[in-house]
Length: 536
Image 1 (cartoon, rainbow, N blue to C red):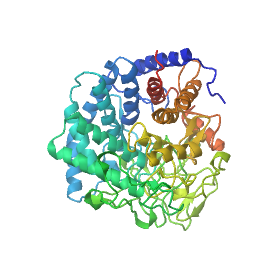
Image 2 (spheres, rainbow, N blue to C red):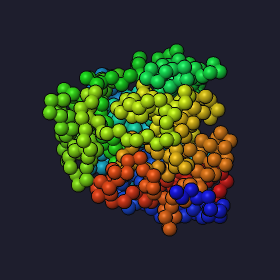
Image 3 (cartoon, rainbow, N blue to C red):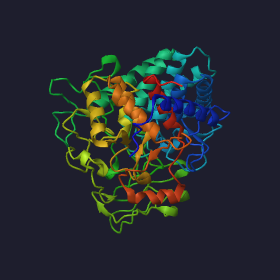
Image 4 (cartoon, one colour):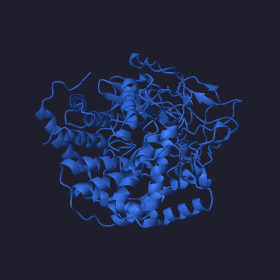
């Protein structure tokens, strides 16, 4: 295992230079940062989330012109969708149905257009992450970026209307759930929007209400507490010292209030719909519930939660009688693990109808995770109850742990680094998902065999820095650097210690080798290197 222990400070600094050069070279003339310039599934596309973190890394260590151009591109992308946001918010206010296919995408072509191929696009976190990144950049550099004030207002209107609705997570999965890392990104973005001073009074009030609602909802349903037995997530999460898990992020919100519009924090769905549409950045093997449910989850303001990817991809599966696990969808898009060479809806392992869904054979749990209580959890996820700690969960109402939860503490600041929930969250991720400073996304990951993600090691390092563990943070940076190839290009994930090695080849046959370079990996390297004073 390459841990980078032999790398010198000069070696680490050279990768800073290499990362800046690589990102600069691949930035589109439009200002967009492509996710990966060569990987077949990402080529020609830019994500708001990826780009915002790339821009933050570049804003810290490089010429500010590059990230300024990215933020100007984002302003144009968001500004061009003002009429769509107005229509969506008007429909929602009247209780009319709004589906994920109606919502703004979070990945775009490099010229700012919507993509024409089917994708799992409805991800709210990208808009919050962009606002967060923009605020930091403008605070750091005195510059005027055209179009940003109007775009800030549009993005804020969109997020304050829909923050409490389910959407896909970072890995483009589980559209029927409300993900804690998504809520943290929105929380950070709305705080940034207020601080940027571009909002009207009504928008400021709406943003404040949403911030309060997110804090309350996460504390009630997104925290597993030390006094709560596994399998029974409660809102009153107290630590042994009597510190309540209800302590909110900014504004000191308490756990006694309800979210806007009386949101209960439960993403309900008819007949136990599961809605795990598969996606390139994360594949699970589970499909939907019996009785041919179409994936419509109920939500406030009449928003439906259909797992309809772009171009009307549907989420329908058949009922238990003669279940085949095949999802019907235009253009061959399915809701199941995609077998090599485009076999529609066929999972590659023997499966059975369990608890109203098709499930894959369970993966063995690594010895490092044996402290975790039980297995199962929502949709077959391994439960996230780690050592009795109070910690954030993958989505509301589960106990599962996900690598993206690291961002809730650093850099999004949903909880301060010394808060028991923050301390417990980082520890839970370390105990269940970290292996040699590399971080798995979640334990049942099968995408390219389920490797350790370089960018998640960057988030782990940022949390170590914030907690004063500089040595551990430097070890994360060295591990990240050691995963580069001879040209210093960092991949999306590494394949030396896979969770599901038998699932790797199907993805290689589908899309080729793991994405490399992944510019988000380089952006996270720059962020962590800057925190540690490793400069070119």
